Structures are given as C-alpha cells and as structure tokens.
Length: 320
Image (cartoon, rainbow, N blue to C red; front, side, top):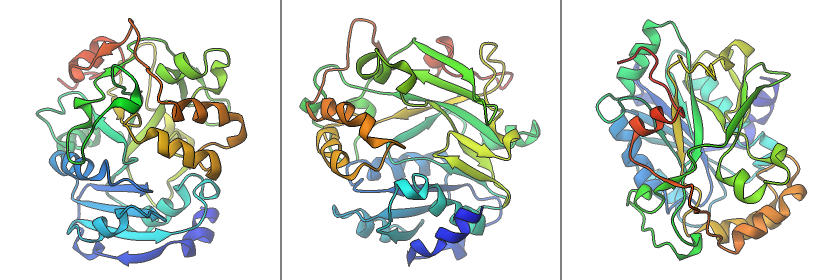
C-alpha cells in the first residue's frame, strides 16, 4: 500500500471519465504498451461480457495505443514513461486507480493479451458470474493462464486488428500442469504448459507462473503483489482447490503468440521489463525472436469452455 501511494505521481491523467461509473458497475483495469494489434477485439470482447468502464495506464506506447484509447467513451486513461518492472509490473499504478475507483466494485485486472473464459461464459455475463460469487460470499475468482498458439511458425501468422485472435491462436497444451503451495502467500502456484515444454524443459522451475486472480470484489485494503499472481491479504489467494477442482474457476486465454511476438521480444531484450531477473530470460526472448513453431502432436485445438472443464483446466463447481 505504501508503494502504491508513493508511485501515484508516476501516472498522469489523460482522459478521466470515472464520473460516469455507476454503483455496481464492473470495472476493468489494465496496463498496456503498444497494443493496437489486440485492443479493438479486447474492448469488444469485454464489453460483451459486461464491463462497464475500462481504466488503462499506457506505458509510453508509440503505436497509437494511447490516442486510440482516449477516443473510447467507456475508457479513462492515464499515461506514464516510468519503469514497468519497478512498478511491480504495473501493479503500483493500477493499485492507485483501484484504491481510488474500485472499492465496492467487482474489478477485472487483465493484460491486453488475456481473454477471460469461465463456465457458461457463452450464455452468462460477468454480472451473472459475480452474482453467483456474491451469493457464495466469495470475493475472488481464480483463472489458469492458458497459452494459445498457432499450428506452424508464430512468425508466419497473419492476424488483423479486430479479429478474434483465437481464429489464429487455436491450439493449447491440454496437460503438463503442476502446482505447489506458495511458501509465503499460501496460494496454489501453478506452472507448466507450452512455454515450459518448449523453452524451460531443462529448468522447469523457471517456467512462467500460470495461476492468476483476475476478478476481485475490491476493497481499499486489497493489493496485488506481483502481477495478478498473488494478493494481500493472504486469504484472497484461496481461489484454486487442485486436485479436487470443486471450486468454480476459469481460464485466461493468453494471446501472446501473434505475429508481433518477434518484434516485442527484440524490444524486451533491450528493455528487460518483464521478469524479476531479466538476464536469466535472454535466451527465451531470443528464441521468440526466431518465430518458433510451438505446435506438436500433443497439442489440442480449442473448442470452448466445456472442453477446458473436461480437461480439468477449469471447474464449474456447483454453478450449473
């Protein structure tokens, strides 16, 4: 909380439309940088699910992202040129906005390359989901980050802004996920999937963390610690119950592997903003620059939330 208070001056308001936020509105929070490839579909997708207002922090984009967001009637925008890494990957900036505007609201915190799916998401919007959670006296909702990828070299794909990225990134790893209890925060720490299979097979402990808590009934005392992987107070982290899977959970379809991944990885090699110890991940980004083919014979084509539930990658609990 002290970090959030201290870093609040790093972001400057560009367009503030938060006066239109109504009681009970579902809000979305996101830090972005050069996301014009994904934002048109991202906004369309979450508007359809019921998000009433978006609060963005733009981190020095130079591709028109900030200008585009400023024109959207349901968007409030802040900008900054400060370090994404030193802001705890944007959590300090978003934490200040959540402290100011999120209290009492269900708040969705996602990246521009994350699309939330959950049981019945094709027929029930976020108000139905949060209504159920309220009835269960739950204030947090967990989701497995599921890396989506194409069949064939990543660099050969031809996705256009506004299209559904799942039309290109239609494959995922259906198995190979494991968990353990985090020694500090007490939550399920999940790793595995395609990035471990392809890039970290010899050092699986360095594979990306896949457990996230993207949807929270916000209280001013809440705070994200590292991305949306861990929260304080610690009780907020109880969002998975593997291996039983009786608890309602979802998935974040991760659309990282579009054709811009090579350029973004080249930039990350010089910026070093996305891992605590970026030097350890130099080879990972170099491999991405080369546009790898992530598909193999074990890959599964995505067919919808029901498929993910059957595979044990999400659960509907007793919400049926």
